[in-house]
Length: 180
Image (tube, rainbow, N blue to C red; front, side):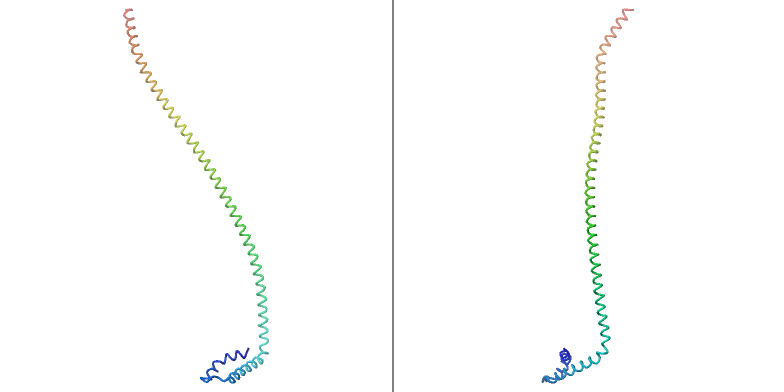
């Protein structure tokens, strides 16, 4: 793997060195081999000094992974509990909606009954008022008829009485003259 990395790192310098004639393969091979050996030696020498640092980093990484797993478990349990609470709240909301719908339906029915009762009361009141007005009109009509009958009767009586009165007057005169 280091050979390939080295090959790609030195490729631009090798291409520039070759010019137009091309780069000899042995030159490229020795460049890559030198880079690989240098890198291997460098890693071998630094490895002992880097080992505690890398082990610490590895332990930190493992602890981080462990904490991440614990947090994932906690988040899943929290998610499940929240989902249960959410479902309970949705069920409660549905029951409240049903109760509200039922209450609205009952209120609508009650309002319809009250409206019918009100209409019936209004109808009976209007009928009673109509009866009162008709009775009043009938009384007025009766009184007018009675007055007309009375006036007509008086007139008839007058007509009857006048000739009779004249007869009575004559008779009285006659009797008076006789007695005198």
